[in-house]
Image (tube, rainbow, N blue to C red):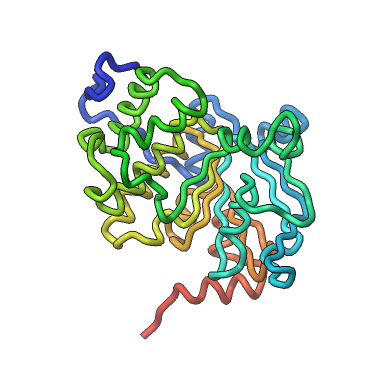
Length: 296
C-alpha cells in the first residue's frame, strides 16, 4: 500500500479497484498457477517439506482439575493457509485458539511457532502475541479511545512505531475496510459490524504472521455478518495465514483450505472443504452437518 501524506486522507486508487474474490477448489488452483503461486501440496513436492508456521501437538487443557476442554489436540498450519475449525458449542474450539497464543495455559503437549517451541526465553508470550494476532467475538475495543487511538495503541506503545507512520497505516487499513470516515468515532458510536471490522484492523496493525479469529460474527445481527466476512475473504485473497473458528458453514466452505471438526475436546476429522461438507467421513460430523439442514 502507498503511504498517505495525510494519515486519514483517502488513498489514490483506480476507480472501482477491489481485491478479487478468493477462488476455491479447482478454480483457486487454476488462479494460483496463473499467478505463479504454488499450492501447499505443490510447495511440498518441490521443496521436500511443508512450510509449517504453527505446529501444535497433543495439547491438553483442563479447567479446575476436572473439566477437560482439550484432550490431546494436534494441529499444524502452513504459511498462507486458511484452517477453519468447526464443531458444536463447548467442543473446545475457542479454547484451542486461546491456547495457541498463550491466553490460556496448557497442562500437556507443545506448541511451536516458526520452528521454535513457545513460549521460550527468546520468544515469550508477549512477543508471540505480536506475531500471532487474535480477533475476539466481543471486539475488545477500549471504550474511552476513539477508533484511531485504539489502532495506534499497540504499534506505538508495544512495537515503538512512530505515531505518524502508524497513523498512515491505520488510515490505509480503515480505507480498505470502508471505515476511514469513522476514524475519530468512539466504539459506542459504531454498529456491531463496524466494531468488528475495527477489531480486525487493530490485529492487522501489528503486522502478524498468523491471525486467529474466534467466532467474529457470533454477536452480530444477520445483516452485519456479510460486511465482516467480506473483509476476512479479502485477507485470505491476500494470502494471510488464518485459523478461524466459526458457526457460519457457508463461509467456512468458501474460505477454508482445510476444515478441522472438533467434538468433546478432540479433533474428530480433518478434510478439504469439499470432502467435509459433501462426504464427511465420521458419523459425528454427519450428525453435526445435518443440524444445518431443514426439511418441511
